[in-house]
Image (cartoon, rainbow, N blue to C red; front, top):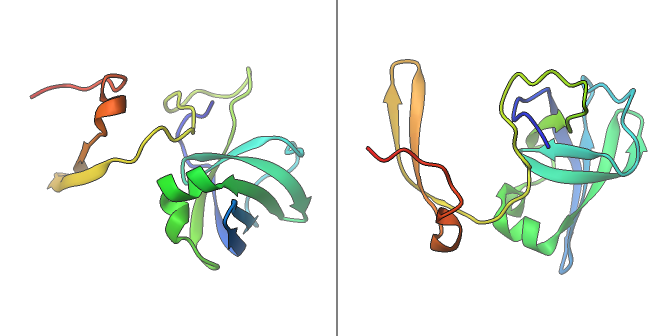
Length: 138
């Protein structure tokens, strides 16, 4: 589980695609690795990835084929900037929202409208997951 609040930025230092998905290495110079272990989850651009290796201020994660196909990782390349957030613990400050970080479908942006200091982004959700989304009809 995650709050959805970005804690740090990372840079893709390597990404190797194969028919089975991808292996990604993310360098995160400002990220606090002091309590990160192999097997921990880190939200990367909102997608839950499992740490398989830690190398200094970088970590490696495997991305399944389905996750590559259903997320922005389909178009990521070396040098891309990635938003990072550690998974929640019982003592984590809950300053944002509670989100899982698991992708269940791919929406289509219908429109983007600027309102004062914010953006309203309207997204059409796939029918098979729409019933699970809390919405406000206007």
